Length: 75
Image (cartoon, rainbow, N blue to C red; front, side, top):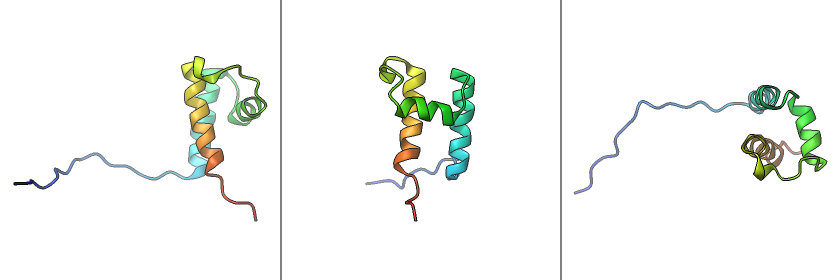
């Protein structure tokens, strides 16, 4: 007999695009010493050889790519 799924006390809250960008900015400053705008410019220009070789870059790149892929459509 199947039992009911157990409820947990883990909660979540959706964050805004601005909050996500601010979190990326905080992380890029802490890990690389540059802001998110500069990181995005360098990353999009191909200035990082292979982000997969550096766990810090890989994590930041994943966050950046998610933000870029889910950007609001231009009017």
